[in-house]
Image 1 (spheres, rainbow, N blue to C red):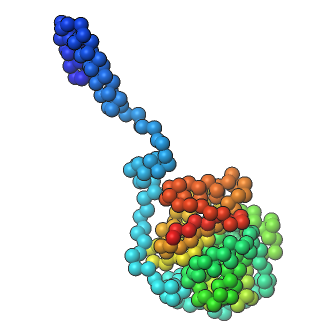
Image 2 (cartoon, helix red, strand yellow):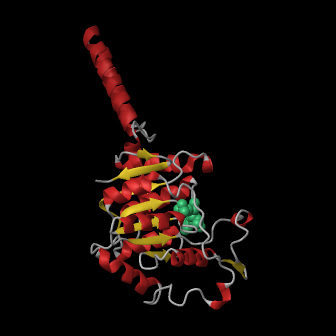
Length: 298
Ligand SMILES: C[S@@+](CC[C@H](N)C(=O)[O-])C[C@H]1O[C@@H](n2cnc3c(N)ncnc32)[C@H](O)[C@@H]1O
């Protein structure tokens, strides 16, 4: 209001002056008024890039995390013991496995995966030579056992941490009727462990039987970092987005993040959209290897 009154007063003075000077003053006043009104307007400015949009302070608030990652990473040779101590009361979950009440319900080997033997695994294990692999989404262990094989062939001392709630998904037993169940508890974890035992990888492959969100948050807090992290759990946008962002926080500098189903139409291309947005946000390049996406942070 004060701005408008001042403008009116200036216009009144201008009317009393000679015409060219009056025109000049009117022009200046209208230009200044337009500038002041535009700059005091509350409507948000248009965005020209994703980074501009995501870097607004109020947007960053949405990404705020309460857990700080430990600034003292656990040394690779201590990672297995750290998980045993923190998750399994300092004992190997494979001790005295399988327990009597599930023994007859397990098959010696029951492995099934999706794209679990793609060339990408060989390429990445050879190039990264990982000491620690974190797999997010393991199911019966097809891809984890494949990676354990590859690292063994190369003579690497690699520890593979398999994060999975080992619940599958609602209705998965329609396709996997042979996976046992005891009092409503599906034996996915036990069948995965039986597979690891059968392939003789109990020293290099450990289950971490929790939701991806809780496990990855704890890894960050405990200082467990991965050289190679595979994302293959929930395939809807929100799950993939959350897993990728959490995994990136615990990726060792120069490490590689990768995952399956970059091209499938599953969950309305949720994985594809999450990976693309994530890469744009961080200015990283997405490479493609078969059905897999790969982000190399080096
Ligand atoms: C596609 S399968 C993994 C296949 C495996 N990578 C392979 O190729 O052999 C997906 C797995 O993710 C797990 N999963 C899905 N959402 C999860 C979540 N939020 N937390 C933990 N595990 C999850 C499911 O239990 C399932 O075993």
